Length: 122
Image (cartoon, rainbow, N blue to C red):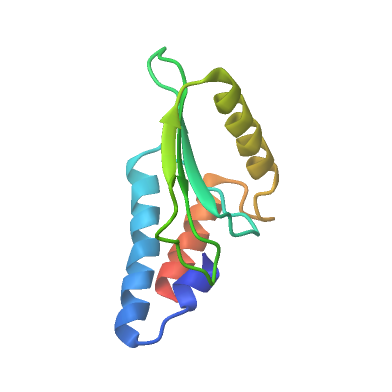
């Protein structure tokens, strides 16, 4: 995220990149259940594991090209959503590993918000 916030070719690009980071911090403040983990890695996908109102948990998964590459026009599957228990269990385990890998000093919500605010102002 630090690289994203600071990698800009023009002042205009730097501005909208900082605005993206600021919007993430604003969302965290508006939605207390929304959690961001700053980890020392760049995953090639993102997912949401949603559990609400007694309904079965649902995983929504979206693939992303690795840094420095672009998505191929032949990509047949770029995302899915499922409540299949084996898939939910696999992503729940990945979430536990992600929580354990949270960057040192950024384990808490306030520390994460401070880091986002600092990046948005850089």
